Image 1 (cartoon, rainbow, N blue to C red):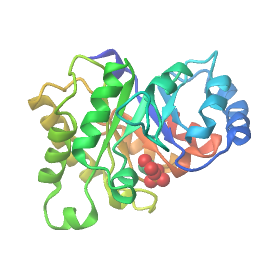
Image 2 (cartoon, helix red, strand yellow):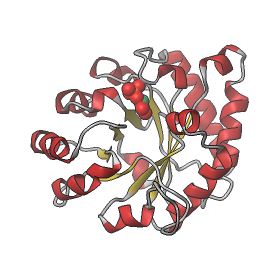
Image 3 (cartoon, rainbow, N blue to C red):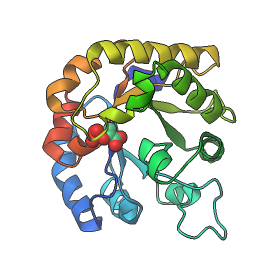
Length: 246
Ligand code: PEP
């Protein structure tokens, strides 16, 4: 088992929430409480708060990174985020392919694959999101959708370099509708099989979608659930700590 899989991972996606002051305030309350936790903790603050996060997390084991990046380190790419600049701040991770990036900003699998390879080439860890919509689930397309996202998204990736996968059914993100344990079990087994077949079996697989302190314990018992990617419930120290304590 890879070192990463030995410890559960709890990742916070803050989306477009928390300015630099709010970021520092969060960590002032969160870090003393998180000290005894034997797990990996990741934070993805908005880009303008990365420097505040870097300052707060300087002497801790908690890792951070951006919610997106471009496939180049610098250049004429107005509005983009550079993984190299995140690295220069001390960031170790980049979230890629989140369903909001795919749906609202039109990101396609091929671009995500290029970004993922770029992030790995810099020695950072991509947290690669996949997931089906409700229409796709109802049309029995879960397997084909996830296979395509994984095959194309990892087509330029290096299996020897760190990678984390996050399975997030789109219909469960921010809706309060968590997938049932049976759905999570079936889909994580499928994701594991697909990753195994292409040489990425050591990548931890996170579940994401309305995870809360009151459902996290049960979900974490499911095979191939190596942790969570959490949106709403990561915005308050108490609820994110409640999840990380599961
Ligand atoms: C997410 O945005 O990745 C997510 C899982 O959000 P939420 O926990 O709010 O459903």
